[in-house]
Length: 551
Image 1 (tube, rainbow, N blue to C red):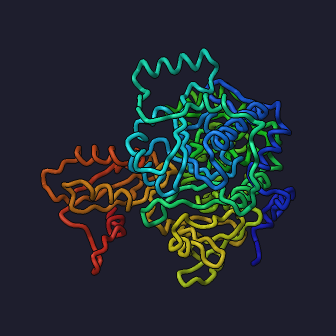
Image 2 (cartoon, one colour; image 1 turned 60 degrees about the vertical axis):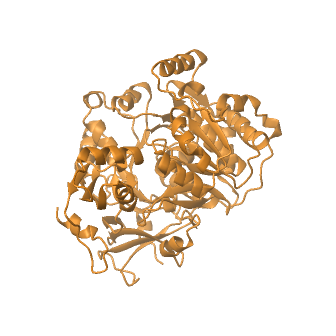
Image 3 (cartoon, rainbow, N blue to C red; image 1 turned 30 degrees about the horizontal axis):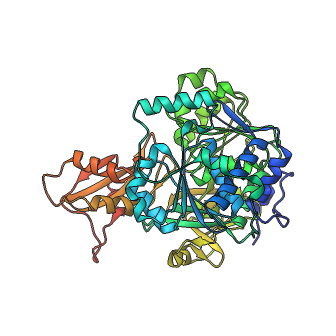
């Protein structure tokens, strides 16, 4: 098919990528470790590791996993950490071993953790000590054999780490579980780099099992191969190469690394180019993030609409706005025009909007780094990526017509883990059906019109109605429930639940408390409405569309 968008590429950007000399993500990263060994790789809480220091630490941990725990190529390793140096160590060590990374939200409830660990068959987990009580609650019901625990202070200087850990223990923030655990610091001391035997990896081997939901409400693992992730890394490097200089940029990473957007873009793609990553374990309150602009000459950052909106409304950010920003990329949710304008007025830098989804590793589209891009566009397809808009009948639509966005490229997943039926629905004849309603203009720029799926997007995080409805239906006083997304000025969308009570004594407080026990914060309905009945089709299916249309 003709790629009419290629005329919008910068002359420096090649329309196709080539990774014929590469077999794994780790191989590309190892080149960066060698080339940039003396440069800063990452900083967190005023502690910095160079590429050389990080490479040695990663090799030590990989050796321990392999020789101490018997982890081999293909084994799944859950990583349940915030944005810390330990996350980088765990992720890179797993990739070096050919193990499959199962990135897990640290705020997950025990119920959510259990599903992900059981479904993935994870053999080991690297987890922050703050969350070990939740793990202990469900550990016996999972296949996990090894628990490696780390503390916030583990990668800090000795005196600072001791002070942080002592303070947290004094405040009673660190649980004291009775399960068997291995300290990350002990694992690193035991890992012998000389004993590590590197596996033979291929582009078809799995690299990451990234969980997502789709429309079924059942969280599924998107199987991202070495080829998929490598392709997206190289695609991102290609479209930014005429603006960003390898080994010189400072990248602010406030979005969580367990999210595929930050993982691929901020971490893997920019890391492979020798950039210095600034990790933000806790971006809110927003002053935690704002303060980093004063400490570092941030030249690159990614974010979602809510993060940019919070920065715009920070008095400190307004008065001490950075003037060093070269590239600012928005993804994860729609970027509001008012937010974009305000950010540009404050910083002098325009936010570049892109598009992606977990199933595509994740980036498929981005706007050229040019001030002349059309407002509201998600941009044009990346190199080696094809995209089109199709009708319900599968017919290719013309520019200006609205239909479902479908994409094809080397970054598109292998399929869903143990869900061949869902894979068949989503991947058809080599095309990934995104479930998003879009249109393309005459110049090849794409625009998202609406979402075909019932998914709700809260501050860039996916919320799947069936999951929330299942939790609500589990309350003994609830007869049935339906969940939809409603507009929200702060988070883009908020979750609203319509509930039919079985027991009329059911209170709003009871529902909120029950949801808090079983759902991560962003999934908890912000709005509740009690109903005597819910609209249904003639076969008894609840009609969410009618509830949304009542707004």
